[in-house]
Length: 182
Image (cartoon, rainbow, N blue to C red; front, side, top):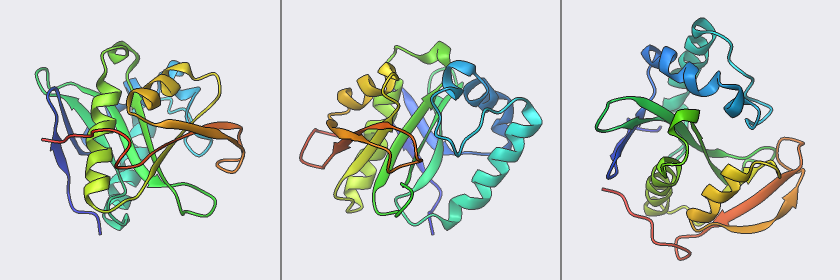
């Protein structure tokens, strides 16, 4: 059972989602610039009611994840604005490999927030004994590829194994890069 989480970085708070996050979450998952890169199991969310349903499902599922897996909201500490989301989950189809993924509101891009939040969750996962994390990105998703590299992840190849879609695969191990949490 995954306990409630709140991590703090220099600029961000990473916390559990709530259904009340629906409007702010829609600015992330409803944005075409974000939705076009989501995995096939996550469709574009069109309105607040649909986002509320997605969040309800995430909140209900959270206690059932085996640590360190989960889904979390990313909040800017100074403004209190919800600017993104990230998750750590087992990749299909065999659920052997942990995937780290991140999504940010387009107006939050370019500030290093995805790297900062991803490093915090990776650090937590490594503290809990995870031996490696993967990130997958569509080949033309240059922002995701750049974030994976900034996290210290190395490219390991392309595959259609995950999500039945051609994806670039990146991996990080605890010894690959310094990852800090506060």
